[in-house]
Image (cartoon, rainbow, N blue to C red; front, side):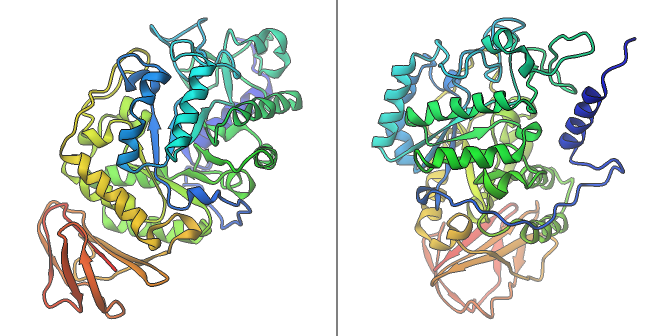
Length: 459
């Protein structure tokens, strides 16, 4: 067996450690406080992100068909439309009938199954007219085997000992080949490709798995794109805070997501959630955005539906994602009780209808937008934990800014609880947001919460 070059072995090690979020000792990597110089677009200050899978959104699976849904999404109240990759998909070594969106054959064109460039530009124009902002999914780490770059610039790719292209190590991603991000010409190409789409009207990018790209590159990207227009940048990353220092507005709160799943399944506790926020609030500065979510394309397709992961805890954790510090994400269909894991490599259309959750999510979005304390990052307020007599079962916190205040009470257990929260500093008149009733603090009685129940008081 031939020996792999040291560079390849190191690449494998970096990937493995990044995905595991661990050090060689097996302990969780400790993140250190940092400073972010990113200036967020004004339009992102209380935004809600909505992820769009064009292939599965409509029976037609096209830009034009999706555009017909824009008025409905406007009524729902979401702001930033994140389009999963819209580029042409590789044919060589394709996975299953339609292939993976993340196998990019051309960085400056659209998947012909979705339409053409004019259709895409018309979609962006219609979205802008309705007040949306549109960000694209961007795949920087690898291309399809038949991307023209592989023939024109083979030196831009990682090779094995025999000089052959290789898929990313450590994954079953056999339909793509790994870029070598040490190559400055590759970086220049990617920057120009990103500019191409911003010139067409795109408002930013969700960058897929940027772990092996240099953070300083994205600082340069941010500077260059901002010369064209304010952009919003999302990194699918959690363990490398360097991406948030200059290039990206937001990263994923993956640990929090998995912790919510674990608590819902009875595998973890409120104590772990408190410990999480002790670290979170000490590491991430107030002006950094963190994406919080119950679902996304990866979770839905590979880990199951929200119902299968959270069951009856879904609504409590949905309230949590819209009131905690962070930018909430909805995955397409979440608002209509999406009850299936969408197939990844073939057509599997979402069934659009209303359900018990449709109005609920609309109310959550309205809540977020109506109270300044719930705005994103530095535009909103820090969380302050509220002590109760049942801290092992409930998670309670307040957020307050410029006279706007929200008190949140979440029963994260499968038993009824009656709580007596410490509200000495919160006297005043409130509205019980979901009940539509007035509430006065100090409260005359305990707060009763059903299993996985919640209350939100708003001032």
